[in-house]
Length: 199
Image 1 (cartoon, helix red, strand yellow):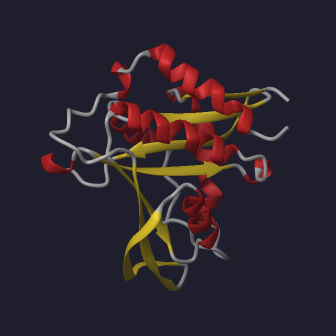
Image 2 (tube, rainbow, N blue to C red):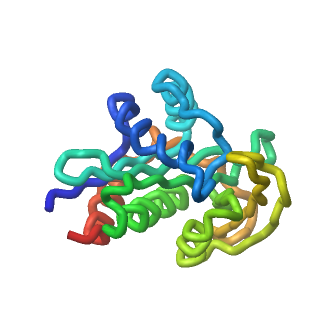
């Protein structure tokens, strides 16, 4: 099986929208707070904002984008700049191949290289699978906001989980934008974690 993890491009956004759509529309398990699927143009705006600072990765299986993960800002004010949050989505047809695990290994290592200290995940209480996944990567529950998301005729809690990436010693250096990280270093991180993928 041909497998590859790489940085996402604008050309991937149509496929990313296809992967994301069921996560917005499914009613049996509410996994995010969006009520409608963003257009490709809306995704382009998000993509440009995110990739100016953070990694956005895709995983290809036999040349088809099967999963993606990205980081972003959980907070906007200056003093919060050493924090980030992460999200991952996998096409249902590729579940069980450990694509999310491979992407998370990559993105967490890249964020550490960039100089981030904390990484957060915001998870709806209905999404127990995501909670278990994050626990495997050392995320711990730090707060629960009760009944803050209403979707598909139900109220959901939002659970904040946190993982520390580095020691809090001394004055932190400015985080490095993803575009300023050595390309070979990024490619080495991506390629070494492709072996996590099953098949």
